[in-house]
Image 1 (cartoon, rainbow, N blue to C red):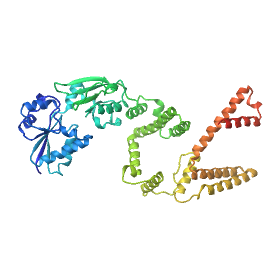
Image 2 (cartoon, rainbow, N blue to C red; image 1 turned 135 degrees about the vertical axis):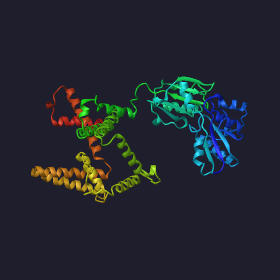
Image 3 (cartoon, rainbow, N blue to C red; image 1 turned 180 degrees about the vertical axis):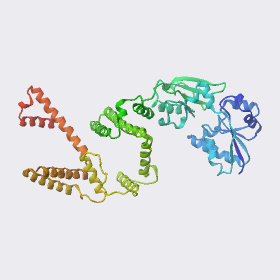
Image 4 (spheres, rainbow, N blue to C red; image 1 turned 90 degrees about the vertical axis):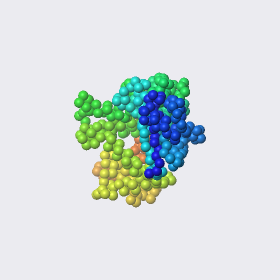
Length: 484
């Protein structure tokens, strides 16, 4: 191993808070490099005789922080070839210091020994400044790479790297997706130093009134009440419903007893989608999710599985079946995506033993949808009509056979031929990329709409339905069609 780079932390405050060992190394070493000299302790160390070079000039040469960090790292490795050196950073070397992580990552390749010499993190000073006990649970997040899904609103949140108003603005917008606009947050500058300031502002004012710098951190207190938008809150609600003090009805349910509700909620969601009613869709999606959560909670209560197993399984499946998104596969259109999907599904099932290709297909579906799924499965191995025109000839054949049985008044054969006729018609729709459930739902809604017009006209007349002939009612139906 070649020369060494010793990384020291300048702490979060003034020179009186520096550990004696770090102070001695900074004063006595002639090869000291600072990531930035914009730190409360630097002026005092200069008066004590510290000599240094800083990398502040590099920040002016790049638009992206990543480029700044990479150049600093490169220069440090080059300088280390000339002899051992000290690299000093604000706070603690291992807290929110990307350059230190890069040094550690590439040290072996550069034949350099990178040693962490310690320091005081800004975290201690910040908790002291806002008078909070971290044992209650906290998160330390990077303001330059903040994602709303990372934030836990029931914990204390510290956001570092809030260098300027642009970052503060992005942070504010992200936080406003999780917290109320009026939620009080603290802007903490130079925590632990004589220049420390703590300013509480409503979240919506975060980027408006205050000058931010590289010594600024943001403290976000937890919400006083549970956030009903958090998945963890929903899970707790479901667990409580089936807990010792929960709902008697919910506690009695089983996976089997809830089956009918799963079907009902799915159909109600489909209706909301057809209505293009956003509020109704939100409500019905929630009802479907409720059924998933209840089934998972029953599985957990029985010691069989939990919602994490459900999430893990679907996550693994989505990653595995989308190599063009999460891997190196290339596709040019949606049809190729589906081809890959089916190939991957087939690979997943190579070790499974199936009695039939159609085994389990559409099991539990209504007959109309199952017919569609059965036809799709058979078509995948080539058992299919060449086109919709050929399939339509089969529909006409089945219609003739049904007409014969109507004339013969044979009940059982009528049932069979009616089913054959419907099955053949579904085939035509499938080949034309018409989903039968959607098509029939549209017709149902159309029938409801037109019949309600007939009811309206009948009510306007002041006469009962029985007063009107079928021809008159059919005339109202024609009016309803013309109005569409």
